Length: 173
Image (cartoon, rainbow, N blue to C red):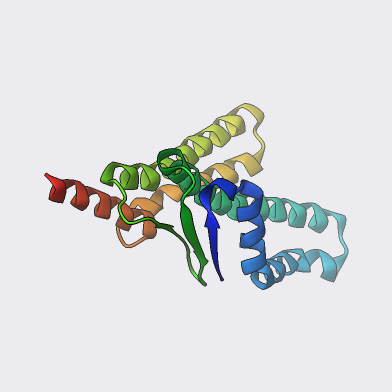
């Protein structure tokens, strides 16, 4: 699915709605599959386990991806104001394309790196909460949020944008 929208009118809830709408069947299938052990056994301990996995699925995977993409839009809005963007949800990626003739290389680098840094810090925060509270869910959540740093390698979208920003910066000199 593709959405064209003004950056100033895109909120976190709108990105979350688009994400759920685009991947509804996949989210429904995974969520149902997670609850399957409880539905087969009707055992209370399975219910607790399945609910913990659901929390990890929604707050770890879905929320981290939506937060990641929203931060791209936030930092783009911070530098360029209310421009048009194209948000595309593919089967394996989410892409945000600003519709503007020229984007500064420093902005490209900042928009590519800042969400990764913030999610990394959030992952460290979850790990520190785990160390204090010893709640295992926080440990797994911290690993999920820390794992977003892998997006910086070049075959992935943020890594490609980082290389594009660096090459554009070198070309300008």
